[in-house]
Amino acid sequence: LKQEALEKVSKSENVQSLKDVRVEYLGKKGPITEVLRGMGKLSKEERPVIGQLANEVRESIAAAIDTKQTRLEDEELEKQLEAESIDVTLPGRPVRVGGPHLLTSIVEEIEDLFIGMGFEIKEGPEVETDYYNFEALNLPKGHPARDMQDSFYITEELLLRTHTSPVQARTMGQKDGNEPVKMICPGKVYRRDTDDATHSHQFTQLEGLLVDKHVRMSDLKGVLNAFAKQMFGAERDIRLRPSFFPFTEPSVEMDISCKVCEGKGCSVCKGTGWIEILGAGMVHPNVLEMAGYDPKEYSGFAFGMGPERIAMLKYGVDDIRNFYTNDIRFLEQYHKA
Ligand code: PHE
Image 1: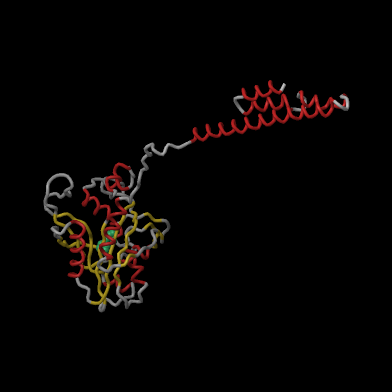
Image 2 (image 1 turned 90 degrees about the vertical axis):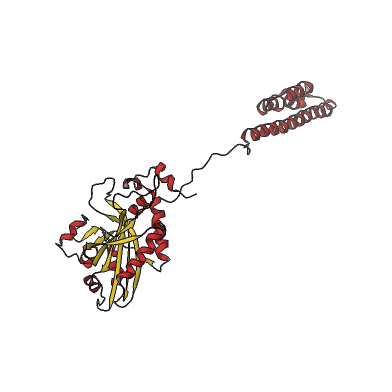
């Protein structure tokens, strides 16, 4: 019996069949249990001999099963580990790395440039009151120049701001009329325009304002010249042309000279050799007065530009919608390495 059991143990190839052997030989219905149960029927002399023998057989079978079980379990664990192991020498899968949006990069570049000249960055609400968006900027209700900026009204008094100039009106208004202001305000603005290659109902502006005693137009020209040269290259010139904005007097538009070059990467420049990049002027006395400044004592200049336009000129982007459709093939070209 022992021999037979031990043979089965050594033939068992897995934990389950070993379990079956254990039940077959050592279980409640197995031969050894049966022998032990029948002990009562044996004579006094036979009992210890048979008992000892049965126990011996049982123990050696049990020991054999235990040993084999440990081995089988080890083997199975080994197999599992092997199957689950990671081959660290395999090449990795590349991870796509993102980067700042071209518009974000341009705005940051312009910000850095003006921070370098001592300007502070200010922000304001995109849902603006009629007062700050128009009235405080010398655009009373019914003023024809309001039509220059078709607006999204929310109520009669609230609208999506059409420019970032209200941030300037708010900042001046906080100063009690006797402190200088030197700020730029980047942000989103909204106009009721039909989207095409050069128009977008939502775009970005970055405006600047400097208010102090004795601020002159030559200060404006100096700051804008420094900006243009740092942004587009030292060889570029600027020129100011008369223009009109209700909140500045006199008002100008600034052109930069075209890059002298040919082929790809050159900014598009038709005919005159100059291209318009921003609007500016001396802050209108009415605007200063409404913000609490005495226009006889204080003066200031302001300018406003569209970072999309700056980016389009700088990088030769031909459609403003590229900034908003988020085509990865467009965006990736401008990720800095
Ligand atoms: N706010 C003007 C616009 O949206 C830009 C501008 C700002 C012009 C400051 C002059 C001075 O068109």
